[in-house]
Length: 170
Image 1 (cartoon, rainbow, N blue to C red):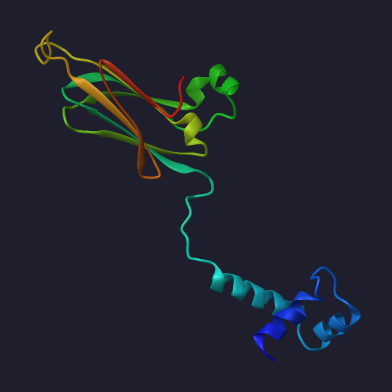
Image 2 (spheres, one colour):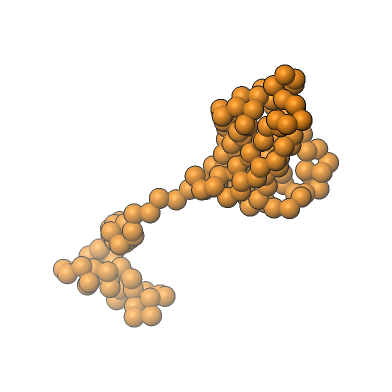
């Protein structure tokens, strides 16, 4: 039997919605229902292009903070999706990590997490203070933040003393 005939018998009548009695008999006598299912599955794999998709549970979000000088400060970043803005407003610390850290010139700090909706929730804030003699009024280090989603940089900001990167306005 040719594969076209096999598929036609598996599919049913011309409308493809119900089997007439002739097709039911043919299915039970000539072609097993499991055989049809296996053939359709194999055909679907054969014609489906090989595509890699991101984890269906979310997107990899990478927060990177760099400084041009030595600072002592904090980094706050979103580590999980709140169910709503109201839930975030009620208890933001449940969804944000806060890390006390020392920033060293030219050495990036990198934090990663998985977010289901990074367009809504990706957020990082870094702030730091510089101590004399490392800093004075003529030498103020810059902080830079960056957010990458699934390897693609989506936001970059620079500032002194404090910088915020977000995928949406807060």
